[in-house]
Image (cartoon, rainbow, N blue to C red; front, side, top):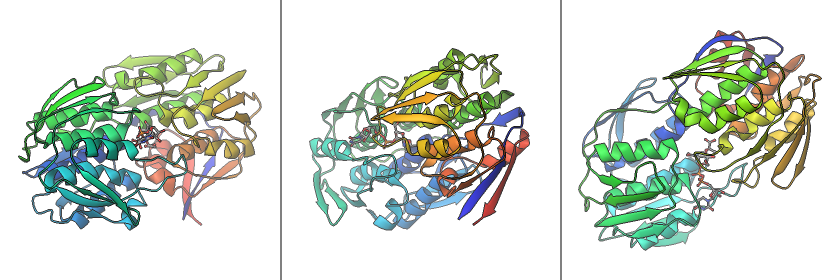
Length: 421
Ligand code: EPZ
């Protein structure tokens, strides 16, 4: 397994180019199961999760030509509809093949994705919605066995909870369904919006894009003609690098980003005393005279994203005062706390609430362990200001969602090296 060794305390400066959004690319790649033509996609992030999903689509029979960030993928020869445990267990987002496979073929078997470090993460809302659309769902030996021999029917579906991949799965299922579907209490994340826009451009009638109510006119099994498209920038990668600029008190510019996707995050930087300069496709963060503490409650888009919680916790350890972070979406998304405490942070947990007492004294570098994707980025952020050397173990978690992290950090002056255990 790889580790990252970081020598902290260096001011950074320069520009970071943000990659395509992993969480937009994943549903858009499974949406190609609905295509009759070869689909050309650009600005794919070069991360492990994308390669894992392409391996799954290949196992199902898709063929593709993939270079660093561009892909041409053809699913017309796709002839298998079983997503096996060995691949689903490595990436929960594999559940995103469920809706497309079922609506195109009328049957599929998808391994139940296990939980993960941040929580139990059930998929009951995905399954309940498909049953309302006429699917027969059976759980057997850890697999979801879904059948809809006459295809799925358009239906009215109210999501009990806002679910990002749940919304995405059902949007894709509704795209080929027989009749109109009205989806209520949908997720509105930019990644959901891009999926809807690409499907609309491929010929599906979708009203309400960007709102929490979507009305989708299914094509009655007719496959779609996709136009070429470019993956939107990764707003979470962008927010992570802004945290890096903030904690090292650097002037840092990030480009190839959509500032509107980060409004809730930018507001928190400004509340902490940082200056944010916004351009059409770039953001620059400038040092704070004094880092003020911050209060954060994670919620669905456009509120403060849970995927930025760990990163802001690392930043809050440098604030002059007490910050409160309330993680409302996942029941166990504080795995980074114990590692930050080992670096000298003063953080107390009480249920879903973390209290961070900012310590003007420095964090001290030591050996720490990554536990999940965003927790590992919080350890990188802390390591960049910690005294001495920080070694982050098990960084395969980081490689799932951050494209060439050490290359991008080295370019702006960080002292960071990858090694093998
Ligand atoms: C997506 O996960 C993202 N993953 C996550 O990003 C992100 O943290 C999460 O949305 C919240 O924004 C991808 O898009 C691939 P949810 P998802 O369904 O869809 C409960 C990262 O760092 N729920 O919106 O799995 C669930 O337990 C990852 O890139 C049910 O109860 O999240 C949670 O409490 C981590 N039943 C809440 O809803 C269901 O059927 C939100 O989960 C589905 C969800």
